[in-house]
Length: 143
Image (tube, rainbow, N blue to C red; front, top):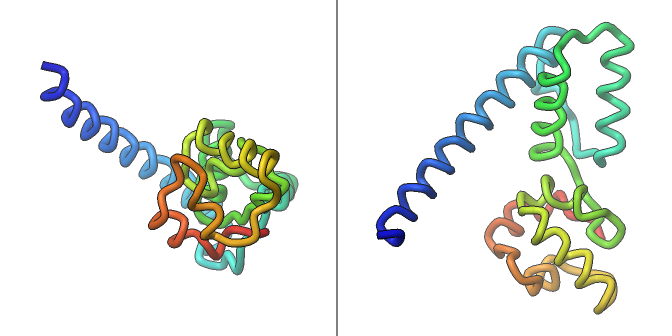
């Protein structure tokens, strides 16, 4: 019976993730869009650079709950962040490459055992990495 239920669980999980993404985007629009157009983001930044931007926004009077600011960060990490796969932690890699923590840990382990990555093609050899997903995010990967 489990094989019959598994597709249903995946669909429910994907649907829940889609709702969560929508809530994240709404919080991003509410917090950031209350002061400026969110389309004015002009480039990719690192996670630490985005954290500085958000801290500066708060100092300048940005309003939101802790949950809303967490959601803003998730949107920034998932959409507007670049990551150096040769120096980042698994926690920094996961949201940018849209992989789970276990896969991001495999990236870190791979580079520790085999050396630094030089290309997206090399990164595709890490177990769990999806080639199409990496291709879609290759402008966000720094070596």
